[in-house]
Image (cartoon, rainbow, N blue to C red; front, side):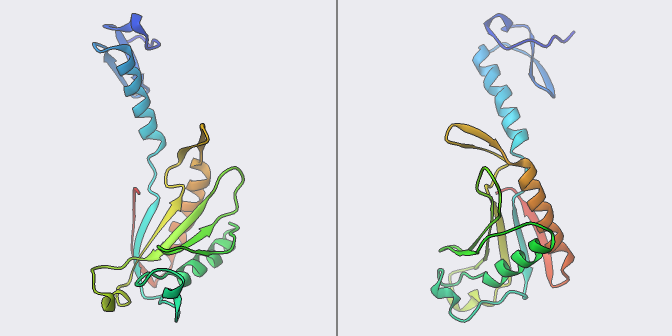
Length: 185
């Protein structure tokens, strides 16, 4: 017989619900049960693949692009391509920004910062081989669907989901882009 109760000192030793998926006999202090419950909820809320790696020869570096960001890193053509394709999907962007690691594409959004970070992914320590590598990486900002900003919990699941779905459609529908793999950041 399973009872759903609030985790409290009175519930120690009784069957208590620690998440919507699991019921357990509590033999530990109530605080530990509450922590366990919150960790399950946090894991559920933050399970979203927000980093994608892929290969393509479609986005070579511009002449002098390394002067805007670090040597061996580029991706301005990729950023411009994503901006163009996102616009076709009615997702508005702002001006792309060079960073030391690659390119930052701000997405118009109310309430919190939303963006795509993208760059060529250099491999190895030999700078002469970096421009020959065809691996790129893109991630979202924020990297998790639920985050805190000034003591306030923000749920970006809907916005990130829409952005990730658009990125996936763009990347998987282009025959010049291959080996598209999504992963947790």
